[in-house]
Image 1 (cartoon, rainbow, N blue to C red):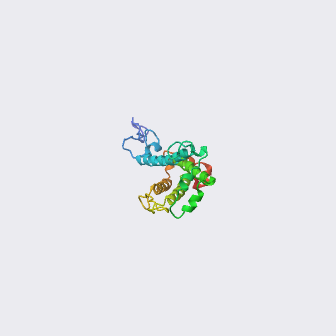
Image 2 (cartoon, rainbow, N blue to C red; image 1 turned 120 degrees about the vertical axis):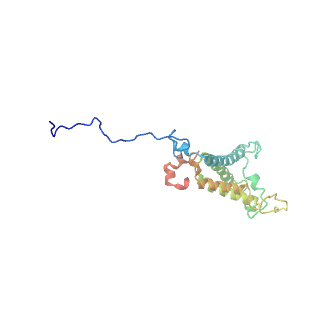
Image 3 (cartoon, rainbow, N blue to C red; image 1 turned 60 degrees about the vertical axis):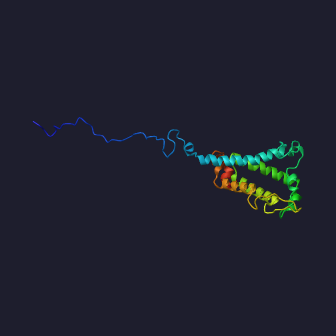
Length: 215
């Protein structure tokens, strides 16, 4: 006789199901690289490489100018005429300025010790900052000021020097000084030092965090 306690237990135990399938990795996944688990690797794009290349090459332009003028490597500066040999990095250029609104002033600066030091430290600092990807704001400010002074010294708008000789200017405004200045400003504006450079580490330094103009 069946009683109220005579119940059959189901042989199956029904438990809630939890799916724990592993995420699939696809080649064209737009997210972080799940194979390397490195967002930095996944987000390096061809444009990053191109802009970093521009930064390094422009930095080498300034750094090489410093090295050649300092040690007389035989390119723009003859051997034995370098800064370390007693030569002046500014005298040869500024003493021959004969055009533009600052011609007399710039000729007066030629060969001055303070002008040599400022010019050489500027070349070294700007070149080093660009190659390493640090202090790009300061590099852009110093580089733009330097390029502006050199542009004024050559004064592309003029067709003739004060002496009447032709300036050989090919464009009344845009020359390589303007291009370099715009490139410096653009590189600082997009903060490219953090990509393929030391900019990210530089930004984490306490002094840089407290003084953002050092970025």
